[in-house]
Image 1 (cartoon, helix red, strand yellow):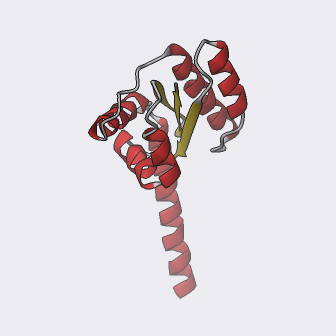
Image 2 (image 1 turned 135 degrees about the vertical axis):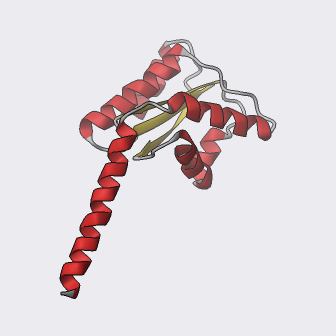
Image 3 (image 1 turned 45 degrees about the vertical axis):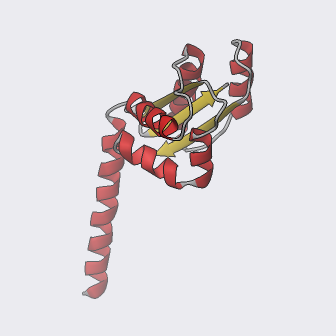
Length: 144
C-alpha cells in the first residue's frame, strides 16, 4: 500500500512539472527578462544592453534549435560568434541558456544565483543583448 501511495505521489509531482514546463511554452518573456537584466546592470553601475537585430536573431536561432532538439545546450556557439563578427560586432559574446522557466522573474533569478550566468549578465564591456524564449528554451545572447 505504501509503494502505491508513493508511486501515485511521484506521478502527481511529475505531471505537475510537465504542466509547468508546458505553460512556459506559451510565450516569449525574453524582452521582460532583458529589462530585468538591464535594471540589474544599472544597479551595479553598468550600462544597459541595447537591442541589436543580429544579437536577437542569434538568440532566436539558438532557442529554436534547442526546442527542435529538446535539449538545453550551447551547441553551435562558435558559429554564433562567427555570425556576430560577420555582422560587424566584435565577436566577443557570451550566452546563457535555460529551460522550463515560467516567467521572466524566475529565469532572471535562476541566472542571478548561478555564478557563471551572473557573470555573463554583469560583463562590463558588453553593449548589445537579447533574450528569446521558444518552446520553454531560453537564450540570452550578449556581445560587445
